[in-house]
Amino acid sequence: MFLHTHNQFVQNSGGMSVFLGAFLGAFFAFAFGLITYVITKRRERFVQHKNALIKLERILNRHLDDLGVLQAIATDGKRIIGGNKVTSNRLFGLQLPDGIDMEIGSIDLINKFFAYRVSIDRLKFNVDTINHAITRIEDLFINGQTVTPENFTFIEGTLQKFIDEIPRLNERTTKFLILIRIHINKLKNKNTFINGLTNTQWEQNISEDEINTEKQKLAEEIAQVFRDYENNVF
Image (cartoon, rainbow, N blue to C red; front, side, top):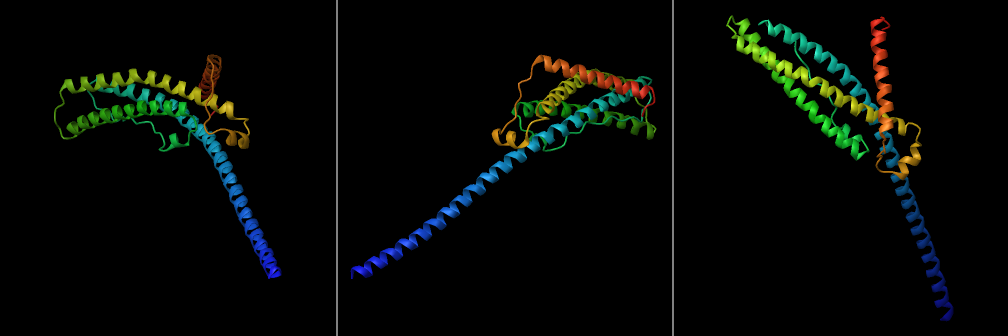
């Protein structure tokens, strides 16, 4: 009887050891998989943040070019409208891709992006309003109807307000671009694995000296582009 009980105990102990070993193996495999998943996702988030900054830098550079074109179109349109004539020129809005705010990993930059988007949306509203007014006058001309001088005067004044707003939006775009460029520079040589693992947000302490240095650098780059254009380098 004792021998039978002892053998049964040994068998139960062996079964428990096998079960415990299997459980621990599964647990550690799960834990390792979870840790690997978290590390991978954090690294991907960091890479996504860096790529979003580069994408935003390109967009803002394009906006600076587009603002110069818009100013030229609006100025020429105002000259033509001021002579009580209809212009075929039409303004255009600036584009911002959807979802880029979800790719940025800095709360400070996201807030500034939202404020910048408001300016771009306001610009688009003004563009649509001016284009609609010009098209209405164009339709009147096509239908052989008389356009009163007051209509031309109204559109001319609206175009002037639009022209006056462009330098302010240009400055806002430049400031945002400088901030993005500084963020890119600070992250350029950062280790993707370490920064992805140790951070979930990538805020940066930026000094006035850094802003002034980057501002000067950007101004020199823009000046060089104009010099190249004048010298027919392109």
